[in-house]
Length: 247
Picture 1 (tube, rainbow, N blue to C red):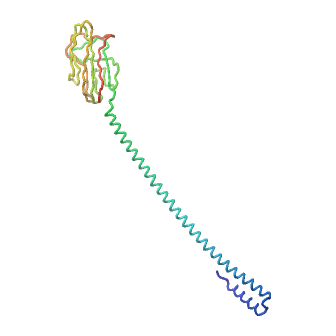
Picture 2 (cartoon, rainbow, N blue to C red; picture 1 turned 45 degrees about the vertical axis):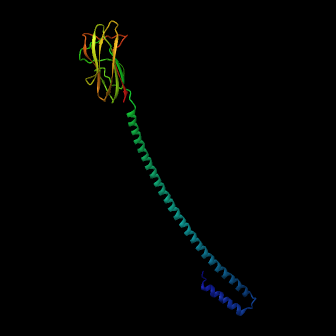
Picture 3 (spheres, helix red, strand yellow; picture 1 turned 30 degrees about the horizontal axis):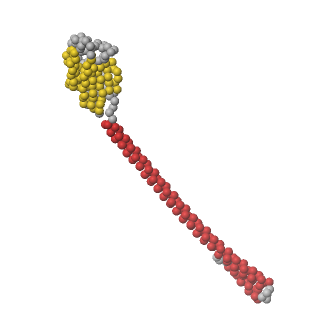
């Protein structure tokens, strides 16, 4: 907002000359007024220019402040989002761990409660001798769920702890006899004496045994007549069967 010294001097000189040489209404008086207006306009323009520069600076400053605030806000949102994502991921991992643990506990509980299917039945396929002390092997397997019975040895081996039921049906030839027992690891759990008659009747015996996994059960003769005393026919079978009742 300054006017050059030359302009002021020139204006003063013109005013002095005009006053000394021409009357008040001469052309110099008009020029004087024009110059005065020009000076005032220049002052006004300088002031407007200064105000505009100040306004521009103020606007720039406000814009910079807004940009800075926006950047801080954006950074804050990004940080919050990252923390939120981390929290969600941690929660998902924790939830998965809890679900896996509960599923394992449920499976253990299910294994404890649910009784698996363990059942078998086997029969003789020919007339058979049963010498004293011999295990009677039933070679023809009708079914063997759980694969606990061996038709090679005639033994049933418990696959799980539980309560089992075992049954035998034996058909002794007429005038022959057989003393037989259902054995658990060599200990008799039931014994029966069978005497064959002319009616070719068959006799049954059974036992209930609480077994641990790995214990074995078989049918064993203790006393018998000689020869093939167990008679096989399509009309009557000699059988050995067993089933897990409760785990």
